[in-house]
Every structure is written in C-alpha cells, then in structure tokens.
Image: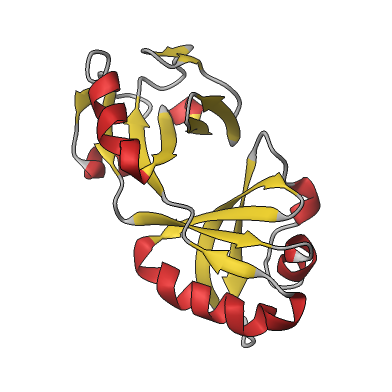
Amino acid sequence: RSDTVYPPCLTPLGDYAFLAVEGERATQFLQGQLTCDLRQAGAGHVIPGAWCTVKGRVACSFLLWQPTPARVLLRLRADLVEDTAALLLKYGVFSRIVVGDPGLACIGLLAAPGSAELPGLGPCGERHTLRAIDDALLLHREPALGLFELWVPRASSGLWTERLGAGFATCDAQAWRL
C-alpha cells in the first residue's frame, strides 16, 4: 500500500457496526471480560481488543472507545453484533449494564499514506486518536497507511457522504481494506 498513491476516497463500511455498553459498572465489568486494558482507553482515542470464550478462542475483535466512565462503544464486525450483545447481557446482568445500538454508521476514508490533512476534515492526527467534527467522530485509524474512519449517526450518513463528495471520490470497500 505505501507505494500506491490513492486519491482521497470514501466508502460505506456496512460490515462494521457498533455496540454501546452503559452503566456505572460497565468499565469494571468489561475489564474482566476483554483482552485490552480499559485504563488505556479515553475520550480522545480508541484501543484494539478482543473478547474471548472461556476456552480462550476469540469471539470477536473490536476497537473500543470510552467517552465516559459509564459508557463504552465497541466497533466490531456487523455479523457479530447480535451474538456479542446477547453474551454481554448474559454475563453482565449482575453488573447492571445496558447493551444497545448507539445508532452509528462507519464510513471508511482512504487518503495518500502519511497525508497531513483530509479534504474538508482538517489535519490528520496520531494513530487511533478520535476527533469530533460536528455530529461525527473522525478516527485516525492508520494515518501512515492513509486509513481513516468516520463514525456518524446512521440517520446522517448520507449527508456526510454528500458533504465529503467534493473532496473524496467514492471507492469500493476493498480498496480501503487492502
């Protein structure tokens, strides 16, 4: 990928979805369930992690964002959301957590590797950092590779695609994944 220069392009990433885990003890509950250290999470960045079965098999991998101590968002594969939510609720019943759909959609943004700025979105940040832009969050997924994600309210994903249309061409999701 680093040898190829891409025009800035965007693609809906419908195979990703989100889960919100909320409650006073959400962080405490998840810390005992996940492979990542939630003490490393924060409002300005995401951390990668996984949730494993009792036999140690990965049930799902995700990016975790903790905007507040009582709210955690997981960005994971859409085909795993339903089962993951059911299992979190099953094991989290005594922690009094609530698991739900936060109503977000994911748009993949592809730029030239190492880009200093994204058209209409401003400067690029460090790897795994998040920045709020209006009602969306820009995730600097892998800036050195030109990979970014825009987490937007599902209801406004079309508006965001239209808004970015002047600076980003539309591309296939496969180009974003390569």
